[in-house]
Length: 85
Image (tube, rainbow, N blue to C red; front, side):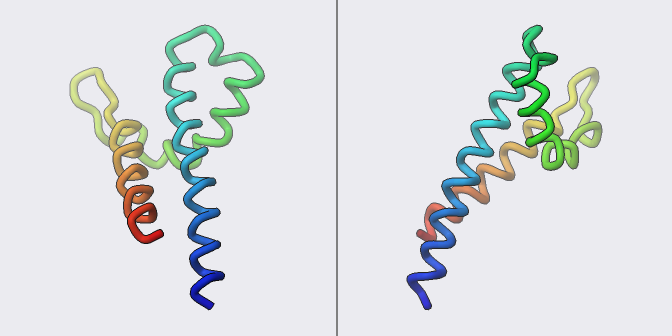
């Protein structure tokens, strides 16, 4: 039973790592004209359900720090799962 749970955690860790890099790709693309390209729209559709939870909630001046906080929390969860496996 432990082997099955460990295998599931390893797969979840790999999927979450890919999602983590997609979040960074979305942020980098948001600064370029490629944001509206097919790949940019596709990446946005993948990461917006998570990052959308944090947008417009942590605003300081003209800066929205919600995305940064979302990535930090995701990284903490990813680190925790990495420590477990």
